Image 1 (cartoon, rainbow, N blue to C red):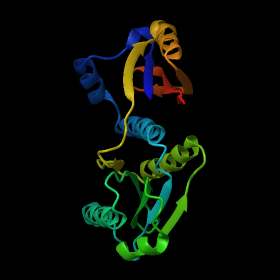
Image 2: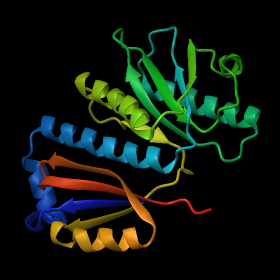
Image 3: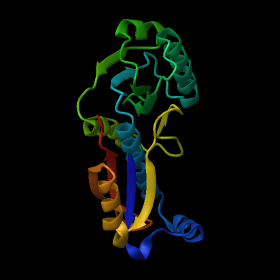
Image 4: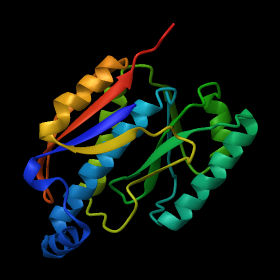
Length: 222
């Protein structure tokens, strides 16, 4: 998969010094908004590049635990146990944290392990309730659902924390920055080499203004 970030000619992209100066002058709220938007784009990249991650698991806590260090350790232990009992060498996952109204943390996890039952998951996650469902619908729906969890983190005022985490073996796209004057030539090249456009949308960023995100995916060959 190929991702193209298309910037206006005047703003593609800022050099590190300009970027640093602009960051210092920005308001904290705008920085957080940009971080959320950036995380959403990265989620889309990872979900589109790993369509085999179809199992959605929710891991909750009975107790009102809000300490990220504790919950992250519990989650790491859970993933090691999951890998062991499923005997899956290439276990992939993408996880987003959600804070409940009472303040407790729970995990939304997308993984490629679809064979394990809810009952067996409960045996290795004994901190609270477990929910499990298989998401075989379109990739946009998966992205939309997990993006909502990032919005909840933003609305709850979480600052200085990683918004999501994932396994190191996820497939990632080729990402390229380009100016709008070059985009037709670049897209034509990929079309001629068997790619099709699967996503095309515009976004606003405080660093560069309006930019366009295009995702291209190679056709499957028989």
